[in-house]
Each structure stands twice: as structure tokens, then as C-alpha cells.
Image 1 (tube, rainbow, N blue to C red):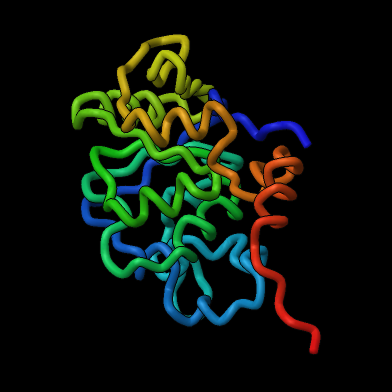
Image 2 (cartoon, helix red, strand yellow):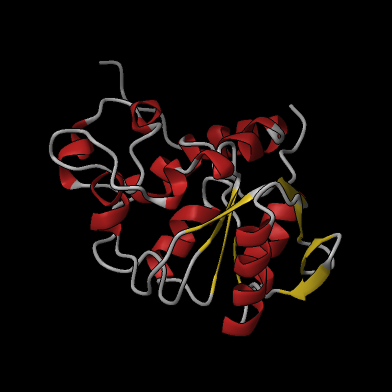
Length: 201
């Protein structure tokens, strides 16, 4: 099986306003009872987006001009709060392929990288530039390049940052533990041969 390398993300962006976007707001607790993560598609920021009767609150994610966006433009301390892995799962399974924010909560960042959802940091000024461009021209196509560590569109190129180890894991396809095992059958068999076998008696 080929390595699942992630070197760049391309697509429209959507701003998600506010600092300290905690995981309880990203995925309300009642959705944690899902059997598979696939059931989380469409649930991200649910209570931020909808009233109790299901009517829209007019969140940017649901704005027609941001339909199909694949990159979130967030704020400071994105993903703080409880360490529920459902939060990045809900985001990714709702069609988002990358998050750009001022900073990330450590556990959320790790959970995101572990499912192939790049989280990169940008300065407040750079994010404001990206949000302003997106507001003026929602169909702008953004390119997040993990090799050059830039977020760019035809109008501007902005620097982003990410710790070296998770960046390399994404670019080399080492973020997916299952794929790593499938790509190393000989090493798996060698290790299995060294492990003690349970008695059948």
C-alpha cells in the first residue's frame, strides 16, 4: 500500500471566528455516542451553527459563499478544552482538510496530525489578511504548502509554521499508523515471531 503523504492542501477557506475554540464547541457531547467517526460528518460546531429548533444561526460555515471550503481560518488557542478525539474527526469528516490558526491546544494538535489533518500556525496579521481576502472574494483558491510552509493565493503569500516532527510525519506519510504497518510486512512478521505465543492447552 502506498504511503499517504500530505504535502499540500488546496481549496477555498472559511473563517471560524473567536479565540479559545474549545472541543465542546467543536463537537457537542451528545454526538460522542456515535458508533463510528463517519457519523460525525456535518456535526462540527453544531451548536455554534444551529438553534435548538434546527434553524440556522448564520455561521460562516453555512454561508453559501463558503460552501465546499476545505481550509479553516481560526483564532488563538484553537481546540482547547477536553481532550476528545472526536473534535478533529468531526472537522475532517465534514470536509475540512487543514486548519490555519494563531495557535493550537497541544492534545487537539496531536489528535489532528494523527488523522492527517494539518494544523499550521500563522500570525494574527497574516490570518487577518487571509480572512479579509476570503471575505472580499470567497471563491479564492488557497494553497497550503507544507514544503515551503506558506499559505498562498494569487494575491498574496503568507508564512505559516508547524513543528518539524509532525510536519515530516505528514509529508512522509508516517502519520497513519495502519499504513505504516501495511508497508512493513517483513518487520511486522519478524517482531511477531519474537513475541511469546499464548498457550493453547
